[in-house]
Length: 197
Image 1 (cartoon, rainbow, N blue to C red):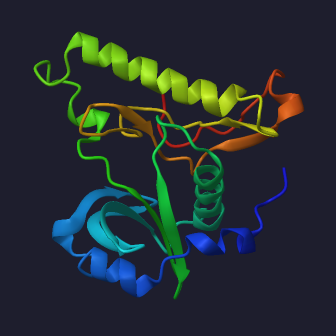
Image 2 (image 1 turned 90 degrees about the vertical axis):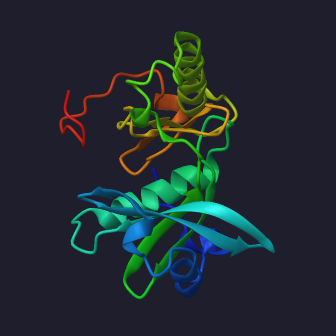
């Protein structure tokens, strides 16, 4: 499929100075996750006159595939809207920084609760599974879209939980976009991405 027209995404641009202010200049205390591709920072961003809780994914400048993954994630999150997907706030592509801003989900990733049977009852686990399955059905089979999405990176770290334990699928940087006409065909993916197993 064709690559996104970056001009069409201009309304989502957030100035770097605003992100620096929101994350206390990427302070260590705001760093909530470290990964090879980059770090994630929690913060509060004043946006459209409202103070919102955000998660800022700052791509590592040395990451070889950062350009492709950065634009793939923005393309996906700007065109996909579902109650079980994370909400894109915007992005920054300024001064050699590549940062994606999403709405912070209060409980963080599902991974934080897998061993906590008090917080994550079996009923709640089932509800999370159903919510993720709704998200997957939406990205794969929604008939009102000209493309389908293969996520390629689903695990307990990429499922975020809001304060009602409703799941929000995140991390679309490794996704594949396929034409609607190809959605029921077989695909051979010859390169394992991110998590093995």
